[in-house]
Amino acid sequence: QVRLVESGGGLVQPGGSLRLSCAASGFTFSRYSMRWYRQAPGKEREFVADINNSGITSYRNSVKGRFTMSRDNSKNTVYLQMNMLKLEDTAVYYCNAVTTQYWGQGTQVTVSS
Image 1 (cartoon, helix red, strand yellow):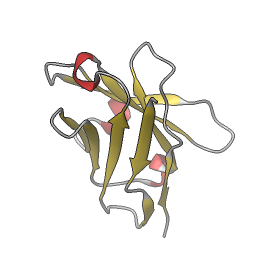
Image 2: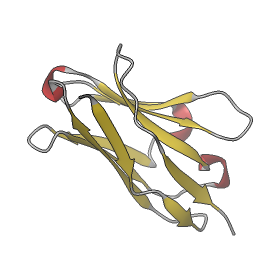
Image 3: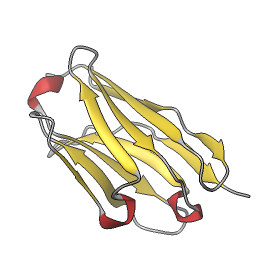
């Protein structure tokens, strides 16, 4: 029933941009805060961005000013616009419905060359 499907990842050069999407289904999307997390090889999963059901966002310090999270409740989708990408942004990016075990399978972001 519950499904979160991340997309939009890819290979980009430093300074480039990507827009990630997370399409949700099987739960009352508009009631939940949503978050983006990421996990790089050999490292623990880390928080990236949060958006509550009023549209208020919060970000980890290292992405402030570069990443923007948004949501479209009519589409049951959250987005992560990533600009000025850095090598250290390389990771698998996951979305999550806050305080739930609802996770997607992730989308790979690779920043290289």
